[in-house]
Length: 183
Image 1 (cartoon, rainbow, N blue to C red):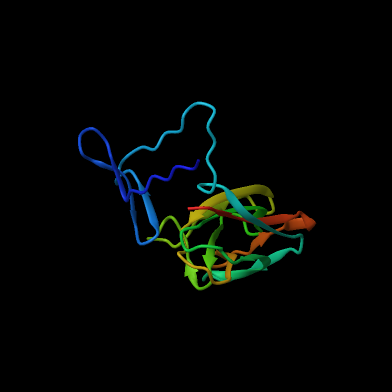
Image 2 (cartoon, one colour; image 1 turned 60 degrees about the horizontal axis):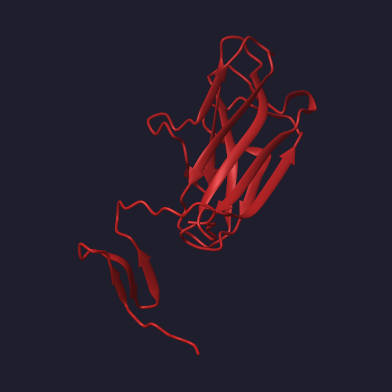
């Protein structure tokens, strides 16, 4: 014998809706509520890595531009499976400024949108070195694009006037990794 219980709302003892079904959408809890799983229980779908894309390059990139320009070959594309997905971007590269006392600035773009955390400067990562002192750099950014279209993420760089920004120096490999995280 099979038993079926049909309800559209489940309430706690205080009369608060804790599970609600409407238009084929199930809502658990209310805004600000914590959802806990019992010890030993597992969850699926939320926060899982749905796909991973990685691109690498070891082609040296130089620029004397004082405006942000696209770094050749340091880009990757991903097509999110849902508008609720987030994209975790991880970038690793070597860099320097060939001119002593000058600064190299970098950021990540999604298409034509600068994702810089420091909106006043438009820069996500910056470094200044003695001339030709190569160092490794990495940064991460969690993007919420609200899209299921193909998205391209690319590193951009610039330098101070009179400087030469250099990335992937001496054939060192740089990478950009994109992870779609279920929302």
